[in-house]
Length: 253
Image (cartoon, rainbow, N blue to C red; front, side):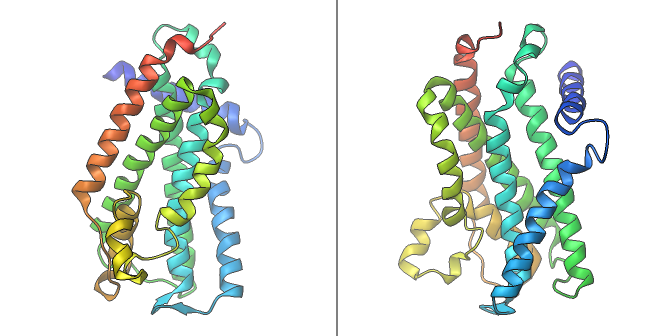
């Protein structure tokens, strides 16, 4: 276990150096990238949307959804390119593809989490948001979303390793997360007959949970923690198995 942690830690340090460079702001880009994207979209929404939507501050609602979407899309995108960017490392017998995926996804989680906190603090200072009503729900929702996002990323990566044609449509699939993740709509706002169907998708559950923690009882939310957790468990397990079975397809020469 200690060896695995050391390998992942070393890979994370290498990733930050090769991906962001050692000059300029370097590692800070890991945080600034999602931060700038979120602030840009936030400004656009603020200028083009009314202040409130269904009784919720538009800026607070948008931020809570967009940061979740960034986390999901970054985990998928950077997992797909992880092996190609680090192929030479697989010559080392102690380094496995799972170590590489773990290092990249931990970095994305850390960077997006810090960016989330920065945007939240900025909005609080502007009077657009208040402290979360239930911090435990916020933490739990964010971690549950990470768990599902990791599983989704590993699953798509494993399938892409087995079926190369899928790698070309993964980008389209990440765009489908916009309507189907629940990032920009609350389940309670949907017609009643569609709510149960929409909740078969695992992604809305942690996002609704996160918003329940931020807005409290003032906002009606719908989520099932166990359902989302076991979806994440299944996707992680299948993804790891697919990657393990596809290692013979990796050309390390």
